[in-house]
Length: 421
Image (cartoon, rainbow, N blue to C red; front, side, top):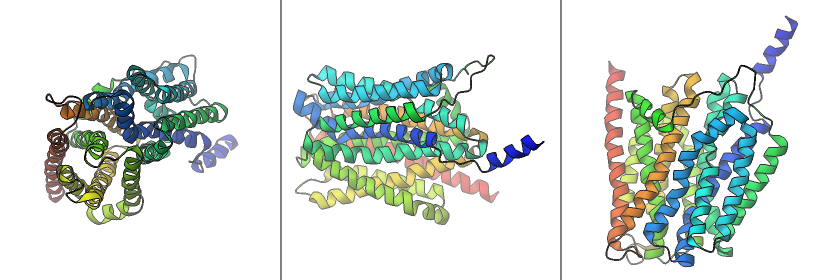
């Protein structure tokens, strides 16, 4: 009796921000920084060092996300069998080595190998989610999974800015920085992170559904299926934009990786202001679905209009206005969809729901750059982009967001009608 009464306060007063949770947050953050660093740097690096065409650059960017999508469930299964800690430790060492290979690449095939290897070792998202599920109570589970979403967002915001700014010291430098960062994280993890997986004699690893199975199963629930599809379309369109944007500014404005890094830093600062200080108030006043509709419309319009901008047509001022709408549109739509999905799920299903959204986003980040590779390719001038291919690529992203915008309007109307019944 005394033993039980002593345990109850410990659970009630459970500290959320523990050292293990902070290490997991840093791990996911570094994964996304590694992905984001490449956005402004890789096109410049591949084109200037190896003469890569826009088609090749698109696949180079896509290769990371494709391999991350494929490897994530595999690493998750390994963590069920052998423990979370060794999988996370090895994956971080792999990230460090892959970034080093990328930075030291002297041939195009070695650059591809570095990105593919980085994607494989960066597929530790499901392991990180499993670790959080192991160490949090049901009451804190959603908060813990939300922390992964925050690490995703921050890593994606800071990565491109870091990559662009460090590139002024050489296009290899950002990758050396990521390599050192991942190595430091691995050392911290080795000495600080305890194993969370509880092994017993009768314990057997869970059979996980495939990521495609989970995504398709989510569509059976019409409401959650629409939210998942909207999130997927949003990330596909935004990934197309991030892939083409650097090549667009190189072609139209003659910008290098450093200047593009400052532009991405500008996008990131706006996103932090909106998501950190304004978003919650907007949700209280207008609700999530109105923000999804508004954000989608801003992305439709900005993706359509920005390719018209050049030194003689609006210049840097018009470009800053256009990409501000990129940031605002995404900062309204993305967290609003995550919030809706979270509210749709029961407390005990929060982790699964957020995991499905991350699976959809991972698949979208693989499809977006691959699609850009085909759209930027010109049969008449395969080694260079043109005005026509730029328009086609941006307008494809705009068309995808138009579909999302119309779906969001339909979903908002049906939800309003249900609330009136």
